[in-house]
Image (cartoon, rainbow, N blue to C red):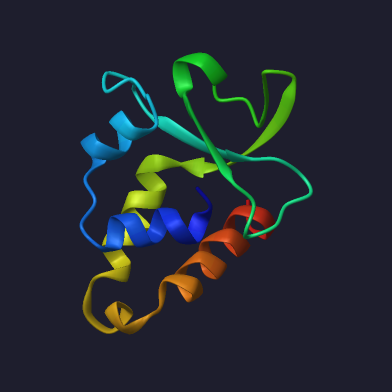
Length: 108
């Protein structure tokens, strides 16, 4: 699942619980972090890890693959909520993905 697909899922009413279940994530985790492999590209697949496993590291290796933290799921969900309000509701999923991606890569 890439960032555009993740945004589409939640903007079309996908639930946090169904997402957790589909990704085999622990519902009791303090927070889920969203990672990506380098070189960064907006169409790269995302990886989702519980913070209890990553310990909040910027770089996290899983199955011999090095991933880099973009943002946590709470930040992502806040962005989705904002995208559904008022004038932001007219933004396309692609525009939202580009803005989130830019923030994660260049403003972090």
